[in-house]
Each structure stands twice: as C-alpha cells, then as structure tokens.
Amino acid sequence: MFTGSHVAIVTPFRKGRVDEKALGDLIEFQIVNGTNGIVPCGTTGESATLSHEEHDRVVALTVEAVRRRVPVIAGTGSNSTDEAIMLTKHAKAAGADGALLITPYYNKPTQEGLFLHYKAVAEAVDIPLILYNIPGRTGVNMAPATVARLAKIRNIVATKEGAGSLPQVSEILQACGGRMTVLSGDDALTLPMMAVGAKGVITVTANIVPADMSAMVAAFLAGRQEEARSLHYKLYPLFTALFYETNPIPVKTALAMMGKIDGELRLPLCPMSAEPREKLAQAMKDYGLI
Image (tube, rainbow, N blue to C red; front, side, top):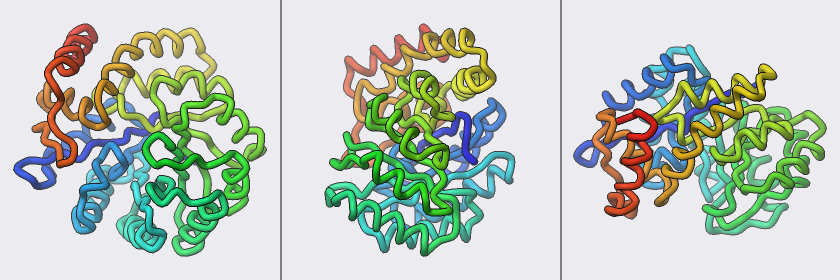
C-alpha cells in the first residue's frame, strides 16, 4: 500500500509556536518534487515535544495542505497504548491515509507486550498502520517473529525498520511471506534494504532533496539499478551530514540554511554546535543546495 519515498517532515516553529505557513510551504515543496507521501509528527517532527493540541493541528493541517495528492501517514505512536489509540483515532478522523506507530519507548516492553500494544491499536482504529522499529531511540528491538505475528492483523500493512541490520530486514521479509511491506528507517541503508526486498523509505533527507530521494527509490523499483546506485552515492554525503548530531537538529539547520524555515528547535534539543554545523554547511555547498 505504501511504497516509494515518504518524507518524515519537520515541524517548523517560530517564536515557540508551530509555523503553519512554513509547514504548508514545505509540504508543497515536497509534492512538487515528487515525494510519494508525507509523514507528519514523527521523530523528525519533534512529536515528543508537541502538545496534543499541536499534534492534532499539524496532522489536520497536513491533510488539508496535501489535498489527497499523496498519502498522509500520521505519526501517532506513544509509550502509552491509550495515548497511541487516542492520537490514531484523531488521525483517522482528520483524514490521514495511515498511521506510523513507533515502538513504545522507555518502558522496554517484552515481545508479547509489543504484540499486544499494536494489536490493541489495530483493533481500536480501522486505519492502515505502519509499525516503526528503531531500537537506538526506544531501547527495545521488535523481533522479526513479532513482526510476523502482527502481519497477520488485517490493517497492519507495513513496517519502518530502523534497527540498522540487513539480516533483520531479511528475516522480517522471509518470516512475513509477502504479507508486510518493509520501508527503510535509515536513509543510508535504503538502497541495500531495497536490494533484499524493501519497497521504499520514510526519510529525513527528503526534507532537503525530495526529488533525488524519490528518483533513487523509483529507479530501483523500476529495475534501473545503476541509476539508483549513482543517486545513492550522490546522496551519501548528505546521509552522513544530516546525522552529525541528533535528528532533527541537522535537518532543521539545513532547511534554515536554505531559507525554508526559521530553524527553531524545542528543548531539550538545542542549536547545532559550531564544528558540525560548518561540516554540514560544506556538504550543503558541495551538493549545490546553498
């Protein structure tokens, strides 16, 4: 259901508030440049520091701005199952096409707890759901066997895999037997993951170069492997530069350098330090973005 390059879009702020005009402009920039889907209120969207009211507004605004031109996949995950259900219900009511749910962070649930968490959301809200596994940020890894159990639930349709392990991706695809779409959760591993069967990416890098990210994924899916490989190596310096510090600090800094947003972050995230910022600026110059 969800294939291609989907941007994990930033949430622009200005003077402490969501900058709705800038968000609308970013969405238009993405669609004009071929992005296959918009993912608001994910980790890159600083969902952890959005109030419930802001979260709901960002999802609704995204749906309004997109106008059904591409799918909207709302980030609705939480380390509280009840809260995840609440956010997912709002996403459906707002008109989102799907919801992305990160594994519950800090709690460190067992594999059975992860299964029951996602099962509860799936039973409570009839909307296509995408699992999101990123143990480096949550403290828990969702095992391929758990993903395979969840793949049997009708409205759990995909997983964003960010564990950084190609063997784990292979195990998921093998265990699910075609019932689960796998999307990359690591920009630098998108092409290798697609080589073993992934169908696209939910990407940070597309915030600044949507056309090239979309072109790389589309080329591989169309069987143009050399073209995809060439784009991978063109993009690779950005894949590195956008993670010099914790995401989304570098990507918001990059968008500010491009004049697209203010670059404001919410504590505990803070402005990028001088040396990594200089290296990021050089990578942006080398790419022709600034």
